Length: 190
View 1 (cartoon, helix red, strand yellow):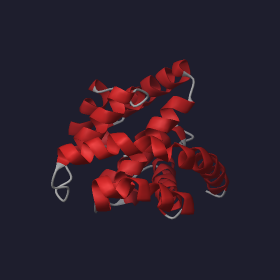
View 2: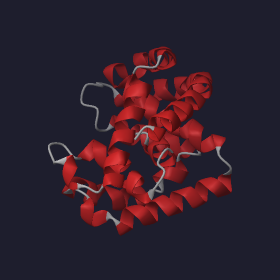
View 3: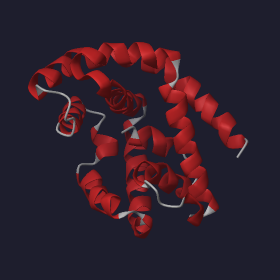
View 4: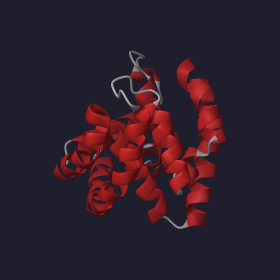
C-alpha cells in the first residue's frame, strides 16, 4: 500500500485516479477509462514493477522478512511511504494529501464497490498525512497485519516490525530518487 508514492508520481487528476484504481480493478476492463486514467494505471504498474525488482529492495525486504515473511514486500511499500512522507515539507504534504482526497471524492463514481467503501476510511484516517508520524506508521502496520492470515502471532510480528522498520531508511534514500527518474522517463514515453 504505497498510496503516497503512487499519488505523488502522478502527473494529472486522471493519473491519480488510475494509480489508485489499479490495485482494485480485478477483471474490470481498463480500456473503458479515459486516456489519463489509463496512463495512471500504466504508471501504477511501472512503479510496482520497478519497486518489486529493484536490487536495493530485495535487501530491504530481508530486514522485514523475520517479522512478516512473505508479506515483506507489502510492508516495505508502507514503510517507504512513511519515509517519503517524512522527506517532504509538512505543509506541502498537507496540501498534497488534501488535494488527493478531493480528487478521490470527485471521482468516486469510477471506483469499484470495495474502493468506494475504503476511500472514506482512507480519508478519515488521513492515510497520506498520518504516515508522517510514528503513531501513523504503527497503526497502519497493525491494520495491515490484521489482514495477513499467514502471520501467526501478530503482536510479535508488530514488535519485530517496530524494531526493524527504521533499518529500511537507507534503502529508501537510495531507491526513491532512482524511482522518480525512472517514472519521469517512463512517463515521457507514454
